[in-house]
Amino acid sequence: MADTEKPLLIKRYASRRLYNTETSDYVTLEDIATFIRDGREVQIVDLKSGDDLTRQYLLQIIAEHESRGESVLPTNVLNDLVRSYTTQATSAVPQFLAASFEMFRDSQSKWMENMNKANPMAGMPGFEALQAQQEAFLKAMTGGMGSQWSGPSPEETGAPSPEAPAESDDLDAIKSQLAELQKQLSKIDKK
Image (cartoon, rainbow, N blue to C red; front, side, top):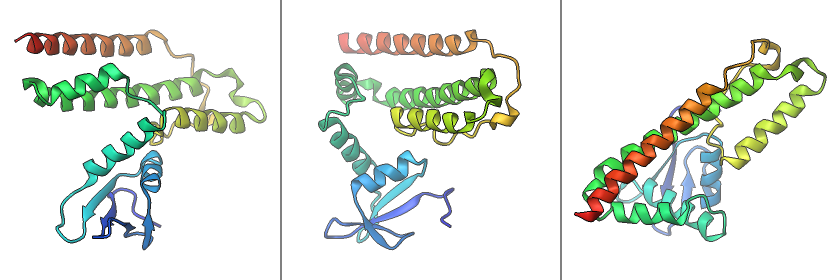
């Protein structure tokens, strides 16, 4: 069994073919996207030079999905990203995006956990199959970003209903951080 703690090493040959070093076979960009959706970190290196090409290939995967109409990034966000490459805010954007996605993953995990705890149907026959379908749907809708979550089993769900304002507070905090960043970016654009 592969060690999923360290990144899956993919080597790019001079022919531009991508080689999975764990399974000793060639892979496509879609295969790499599947590894990532399944929660696996991937590192892509050039065989000859040893250069890390991971960012280049991840951007290519995103571009291919966007070009097929699987749009996740709204046009205004793409415009802001392009602007960030030409402004002094470049140093703040990566940290902001990383923090935003981390908060999103945390919120998603909490939501799944709360759904399990608060569900009175947890003891009903067939609930486990329904729960598995629900998790598969959520994973498909979010591109697998919540695949690392391992919440309580249906047998463990007996806790009282969680308080909804906590999730609302998280969303409000994200909105306020986004608004603050937009204000900062607009001030920089005006200079």
